[in-house]
Amino acid sequence: MSIAQKFDKVSPHSIQVCPLCNEEKILISNGLVDMGKDLKMVPDRGYSFCNCKNIWFTDWSNIDTRNRHKNESIEVLHYYLYNIRVRVNTEQNNIHELIEPPICNKGYGKNKVYVPGDAPKTVAEFERLGFVIDNEFGNWDLIWSYHVLEHMKSPIHRLVEYYDTLNSDGTLFIAMPDPYFIEFDDPYTWGHWLLREHYIMWDMDSFCDEAEAIGFKIVHKIRNIEPKAKPNKDMHIILRK
Amino acid sequence: MKTAFVYRLGAYGDVLHASHLPRLIKEHYKVDKLDFETSIRGYQILQHNPYIDNLTCIDSNKMDRNSLVTRWCDLRDRYDMFFNLINTIEVEYCCNETDQRYYRNDTFRRTKCGKKNYYDVMTDSCCLPESYYGTRGMMYYPDNEHTRAKEWVRKTKEKYGCEWLILVCLSGSSMHKRFQNCESICRKILDKYTKSFIVLTGDKDCLCDEFKDSRILSKTAKWNFRTVALMAKYFDFVISPETGLVCVSHMWDTPTLQLLTAASWDNHIKYAKNAYWVQSDTPCSPCHKNPIMYYGCTRKDGVPLCVVSFNEDKIMAKVEEAYVNRSKV
Image (cartoon, rainbow over all chains, first blue to last red):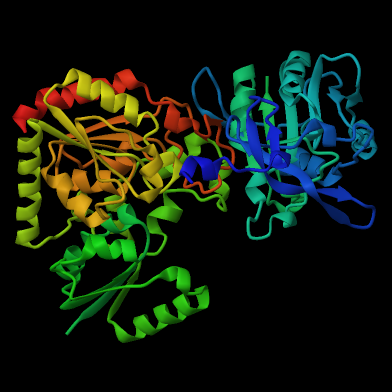
C-alpha cells in the first residue's frame, strides 16, 4: 500500500467541512455535552482544525440554537475598567502615550453600550456605572462581546456588523475560548469542547488578522492568565474602530 | 582523560544535522574520548566518523520512556559531559501535533522557527559558541567505497551515453516530503536535455510511484540510504523534496534542487553551495510543522496541498539554471 493510500483511509464519519474554506478536515477532538451535573463525551462527533484561519470547528448541525448559554463575568468588566491601562501611538507625533482605561464613560454624554448574548448581571453593572444600554439601534460607543462569537454561525459577518455599528473611535471588547490553553496530554481539561454551543474557536493572532482586515485596530490582546480577570482558558481582545 | 557522550536519535536528516558536532565538541571542550549513540538510521550517517570513538545504535521503539531516562541518568554519571540531543530540531523547530504552536498562525511559526539553520540549532544545543555557526555535517566513507561509487557513475554514463546524470528522490518518510509531480518533471527533463539520464531512488513505499523510460534507471528500495548518500556526491544533479538525501547532497556541494514544503530556505539551504530551491506555492508553506495525521492540512488528490502546489515551470527554470551552470562547477 502506498503512503497516499494509507493517508487516505479515514472514516467518512470523522470528516467535517470547514465553514470558512469548505475543505474537508479530519475530526480530532470529541465534543462534550452538558448533562447537567457533568459533561459527557460524544464518541462520534466533535471538533476539527483547519489551517485556513487556524480555527477549531464543529458541524453547525451539532449546535443547539435554543441553548441560551449564559457566560458573563463582572470581574472581567471591573478588571478592564479599573486595573488596566493601554498604550497607543498617537498618529501625530508617534509617541507612546498612557491613556485612560480602554473601557470607560468618555466625553460629556452617556456612552451607549451593546451587550450581546444573555448577560443580565453585566447589563445591570453597566447601568449602575452610568452607561446607557441599547441593544437595538447601533451607533454604540462600546460593544461588550463576552464569550459570544464562538456561538455564532457567521462570526466574521458579526464582526463586520460590530464594525459598522460602532461609533468612530468606538471600542469592541471580545472574550473567546483560546485554543492556546489546550493541553494535548489531556485535552479535555480545556473545557470549551461544548458541542451544542461552541461552533468556531479561533487562534488569537489569526482572529486579530481578520479584525484588522475589516478595519479594526488592535489595542490590546492577551491570553488570559490574570487572576483578577477570571482566567477561563480564554483570550481577551480590545479593538478600536 | 575527558569523556563525552552524545545521544541523538531521529531520522537521517536529524542525525546528519548533528554529524558536525563530534569534531566541534572535541575541539571546543577539549574532549579526549567521545561516544555517540543513535538510531539505526543515524548509524548509517555516522559510520566511519573519525571523531567518534565508539558509535552505538539502539532501536528506541523497543525502549519505554522510563528505560531511556534511566539510561540517560547512568550516562550522565559515567561521562564528564553528556549531550542529550533528543527532539532538538523536531520539537523546537518543527511543531508536532501535540504542540500548541502547531495550531497558531503561520506568521508566528515562521518568525520563531523559520529563521535558523538546523546546523546552527544543533550547534546551539551543545552550547557551542556562535563562531561555529555555518559548520556543516559530514559523512565518512573508506576510500574504496568512494572509488566504487565514482566507477559506477562513470560506467553508467558510458553505458547510456549520457553527460548529465541526475538523481531523483521520489519521496521522504512523510507525506509532505513527496515529489508528487516527479514523473511529469522527469519526462520534461528527458525531453529537453537529450544527454541527461535519471536514476530514481526512494524506500519500499515508493515502489508504486516508479515509472519507466529507456533513460530512467530505478534504484528504489535497492540502494540503502548510506549508498544513495555516497552516490549523491558523484551525480551531476540531485532533485529531491525535503528529505535526508537533499541534506546529504548539500553537504557534498553537489548541485541540488530542493522542493521545500514545511521548512524554509534558512532552515535547510542557508549554508549550501550549488543550491537551487523552489518553495511550494501554497500560502501555508513553509509551515514549520511536523505532522503525522496532517490535522488541519488541506488535501488535494489525497496528499497535502503543499505537495501538489509546486509550479512545474518554476522547477524547470531551476533545472535549466543548474544545467547552464554545470560547466562552471
